[in-house]
Image 1: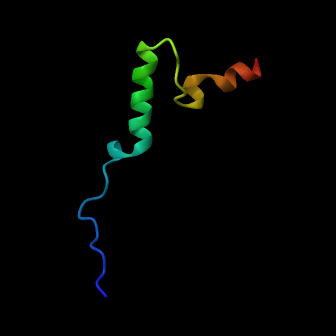
Image 2: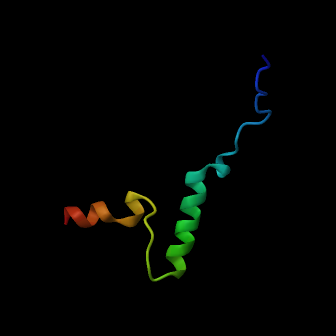
Length: 51
């Protein structure tokens, strides 16, 4: 049986899903009154819990 073809170029870092989601979430946070979770450091949930 034939083998599947290998990718000729590796996936670019910017094309990873997590990067795209973060970019969109930050864009939402700038404009919307409803805030979206980005990262633990940015969203500050951990900081709020300790205080």
